[in-house]
Image (cartoon, rainbow, N blue to C red; front, side):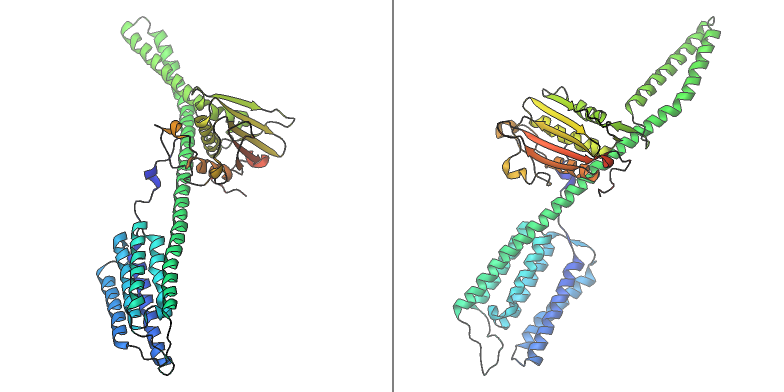
Length: 441
């Protein structure tokens, strides 16, 4: 039950397709042209059309050059994507300079490139783009041409109002980009954690399939080896007077017997892999407990025998890994003892794993089971130990819940101390012959 390596599931980089950026830039260019046309022709306001159209035309020309020169489907390095988003901010600032600065209601479009960066680019580049947007907004607070308006009734906004607009833009850039970044980062972590879960389950299923293949091979090879062994023994008896051939036949018989012994061990250690490879609850508990004995922590197993027959389920890699992972965590954090208690009735099958360690910290107890959330020991206890990604409990919980189990976490009631993990299955789900990746209903 090893921890997943960080390098296996961390995104090596964040890349945005050139086509995505170009689509946004084309949309911006068309929107800007439409706004200029409506203001000039529809509202009949006096707008400096030539510089505004020139800026939009240069933006469209750059889009065309990029689309022809490069493959739109290629993924941009983060710095190049950030450069294009920064160019969008500069182009918007230039248009706003000719159309009223921060008095223009379209000044809030400064938010768009920063939000895109927050969801797709590293945080350092997002901060740089946000700083550029704030700098452009600050310049437009003091330098701009008058807002196109009715010449007979000009709009005059007080400086305090313009400062309020500037402040609202700055705050909106900071708050919304931070929120977008956190949401996107959580989604990435969850995606990585689910990928880790799928990989663990695939590995466990692959090991089970190898066990079945080994048992099947042992069964198939048993018959020809038995034949070889019998014939070699008869030849040994027939040629006992011939020392030269008798010695070779004896060696052949001994090697055949050795092969039979090896295949017998494989058969004992391997599961059949067949649909009828069933294991009772007590066997499941013993199989998960056995690897963690002799580590200086006593593991006490208590099975309450009830009137109902013992539940017998399919040998399920998801259950074996999930229970084993939780038990491993209990052994790691226990001071002296880990308890495994099990009981059942006609409706449910329950398993409780508890330890006498420090228990779950109050600040993470409600979040137990989230990806990348680790249960930590004290500083002295944790020194020299490997710190994983905190995926173990998430993977265990996800795999167990796929089998129909309900997993809950708590601490022992004072004055006792330690963590408690309660796993409960509906009995019909525990005993069902279903695959581990079948979703719970």
